[in-house]
Structures are given as structure tokens and as C-alpha cells.
Amino acid sequence: MEKMNKKERVKKIIEVFDRIYPDAGCSLVYKDPLQLLVAVQLSAQCTDAKVNEVTKTLFAKYKTLDDFADVDVKELEEEIKPTGFYRNKARNIKMCCQMIRDKFGGMIPDNLDDMLKLPGVGRKTANLVLGDVFGIPGIVVDTHAKRLSQRIGLTGNEDPVKIEFDLMEVVPKAEWNRFCHQLIFHGRAICTAMKPKCNKCPIIEYCDFGRNHS
Image (cartoon, rainbow, N blue to C red; front, side):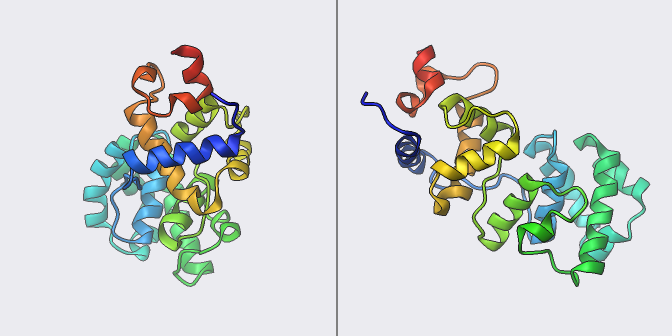
């Protein structure tokens, strides 16, 4: 194969992903921006499937910003315990909702700077919410996006923020959000952490790891 630069490879990968993951999107189940914000915070070090199990009853019980802002932390801890790290998550969700109510007029911020002021909200959470709720382009670096971007050869970094900026350089801005969702889908289906299915991978010719292990 003729040597391609990273931007050219990404363009080819997106063409493949658009065919096999045309509807790739957030796997978390939510009905409004607040539910997505809470669900993403719960998803840290937890599978989306488990989060969806927990939020099914959680969102039936706590329906408004005030419900989360005024909840007893110990009570919330019990509700979200199966997601792990529940003490930190409960405290952050409560404080996050209090700040949205008290500092942002009850509206989830629609910009990165203000989103990052919210307790428990890092760049991954902020970019996901901004992208899926407000349509603001952002790179979401979760464990799948990190692993795949490293294996493909789009970054040599370990730090998620550095990976985010590396991907911003080679992925067209209009594709940022969808590409990250597609990476997650591909990471679950083919490019798994322990035993990647390189022999079944449709983007193997554009992947450093795949070409070296096929």
C-alpha cells in the first residue's frame, strides 16, 4: 500500500466506519441533557450497560435538577453503588447539579469552559455532552478511543488530553463526535482490549497494529 499520512488514513477509515457503523451514537440511555450528564459521570470506570441498568430506576426516582441537587448523598450513594466509585460520583453529581442551579440558572452550560467548572466533569464528559446535546464538535477520549487511536497509529501519547489534541489535528472537525462514537463501536466489536480480531478488521490496511499482527 502506498504510504498514507494520518489525515489520509483517517479519511479512509471514516469511509469504512460510515458503512458499517452508520448509526453510531451514545450507548447511554437518556431523555434529556441532565440525564445524559448524570449518566456520563456514572460511566467512569463502568460499562454503559451497567449504567443503563442503574439509571432505569434512578431516573424514575430523580426527575429534576432539584431532585439531584437536594438529594441526601448517602441515599444517592446506595442508588448508584453498582457503578463503582459511588461515593465520589454521588458527591460530584449533587454538587454539579447545585452549581448548575445556583451559578448557571438551571441550564446546563453550552460551552467547554463553563462545563469544566462543574464538579466531576472532565474533558471527556464535557465534550460528549456538548456534542450530543448542543451539536458542538468535540473529541471524546474514552478507553476505546484511546486504545484504537494508539493502535491505528494516530497518536503516540498516553495522556487523554494529548490524544484529544492529536486527533483534532487529523480528524475533520465535522466528524469529531461521530468518529469517536464509531471508535467505541469498533472497539467493542472488533478491536477489543485483550484479543483484537485483526483477521476480521475492515480497517486493517490503515492500522499500524493490524498490519504488524496480521
